[in-house]
Length: 85
Image (cartoon, rainbow, N blue to C red):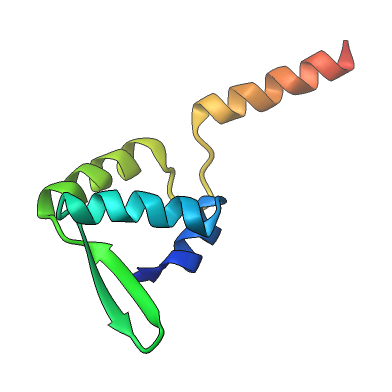
């Protein structure tokens, strides 16, 4: 869906200027579309290929809500063992 620069920055945990610079580059490549809604500019993906790639990456690296990937589980258990030692 569409998101503003501020919402994207919050979600990514980075600054609005940083997100704006990246969005400008993505717009120049026609990967992202922008539309104005009052004083807010809303951004969305403009490429089916980019959406497909993001979908693959999301399924690969982002677990469904409530599930922790095995790598993170191992990291936590290693941390606990280190503290106990």
